[in-house]
Length: 74
Image (cartoon, helix red, strand yellow):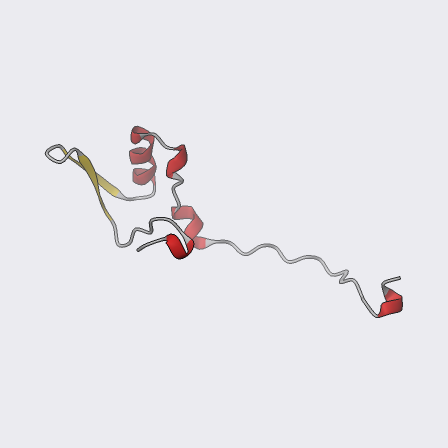
């Protein structure tokens, strides 16, 4: 049927999906607790310090992307 309408199915081997280089740096915070988040950041090479006065953690890095798509911010 396909041949009759001029449609040819590509029988070549499918290409492997390209590696997503930034994926290695992604941390899904939904699945993290406070302690595992710090551990995950450290494993990625991000320096984390605790600011006791402001009850917060500070990270030292070049860029942080919060969210994704049109709702994300750099």
